[in-house]
Image 1 (cartoon, rainbow, N blue to C red):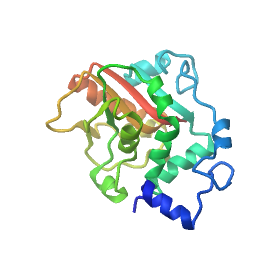
Image 2: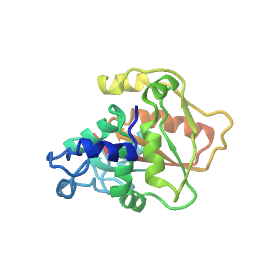
Image 3: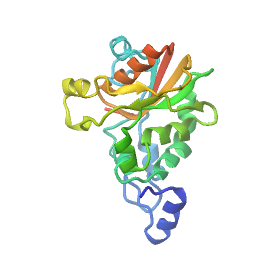
Length: 226
């Protein structure tokens, strides 16, 4: 069962929250450990090369994106564990923690204007089992009310977990698995949210669907990369 903010606070009365970085009784990540985290530099692509709007020329062309904002390296142990707590332990208040601590940073790095925010979807079966889509939860917590949110995409079938596949297999695994949701109005500009970008295979396939539907500009937002 997902644990929301209120549920987590009540649970903390019996089981105090320990920092995922150092273990001290505090919050998901204590103030000292948060100060030690290094934000990803805006002028670098997620691959580490110099770029514009968070993308090198190679990944801009490969993924079909106009820009990408990512906050942390997935190699940061506390960040990696925090994402795991959200995705696999179903602590939905992790999204609230990210919003409380990093929303201002996210909004400062995203483009302004008439952009619609959407999330990389889960399959119907997977979302039913988990109880929520972690990317949609992060998208809403980190961008509303500055941006409007809409479910634009659906995942048509189950796929193998990307983490268990190599680069070539990841692309094949997701080929034509996403589609535009029926009846949605297609915006001109979209901010696409996912929790982590690794090879970019998921973003590439979702961007392909959005471009085909007529979206003119697409920016991606992820918590981590690597």
